[in-house]
Image (cartoon, rainbow, N blue to C red; front, side, top):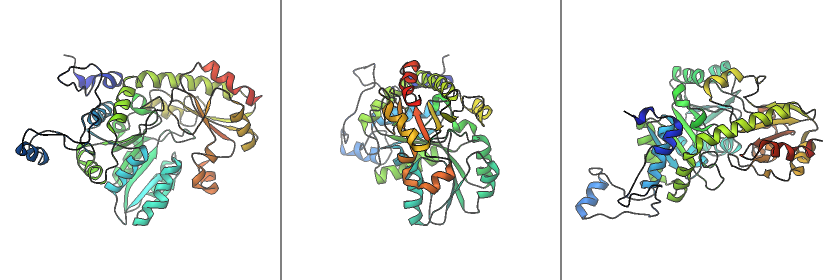
Length: 392
């Protein structure tokens, strides 16, 4: 029997969580409604009391959003998923659910700038403590754990230096301390990496990136077990309302159908670009886990199906050289977003990470000569040709 539990991620992205109305549509429908009606007052009472299945209000129950949640959960190997209005809304929802005053979070020092801002500027006001360590130094993680550590938080690969965190080792450290491990899987998606299979407790996504794949909508998701995510995270989302719109959920549903193919294509293009950049005399260093000289190349090969679509590199000449390269491009899109069919290029020190300050950037290894490219689906030879003038 063709058991859907054994389908590949590519098949799950297309065939799992298929909802059809009585009209028997082949493509998922959009349920663009704020509320739902009932046949009687008694039925409404039963649905509100969870005595009968049914939808109530699209802030927390909507068929299109539910289909996206179930499909993404199937691809990640998670019991539950809660979709949110953005990736940052997913982080905020998770932290508000898990943490209380006096708790400590141990995080990678290389995180998305807005994540660090959320930690340092907002959650500290509620008495939550944060500290940061080198994402690849397991001893630093072990030493950094405290008696009140509730959560370990990491990206892998990291943004923008593509450092690889050993998920299984980090999960062991977290669980030994009685803490949870959350992994941001935005850069690779479940098509290339499934952190829960390596022991992580929670996964965060910015669906805005590769899950959509075409730069159309903003959204996020939290994934994990049925109790913690399906009940506790869901309860906060229901109450506070950082919910995903049905239209955006429909767009993401369609994005998941091509995710596996796109991620392989992004990865193949990124590897070729990284190899080309590594041979350029103007480039001081290339950061891409698919290159054999990457410090965690062997680890990436164990826990990833491919290297992903992000390539970062340091230019000799610092900020001036970086701006010259970026401004010389004619095809690449100068934008900080990533995960698009269109290749994007940005200068992290002055865009994605400018708010964390020069000192924090220096500790994280984000220099003024660093450029990040999110490789799209154009012909790689055309991407290289667009970069050539700025490197001449």
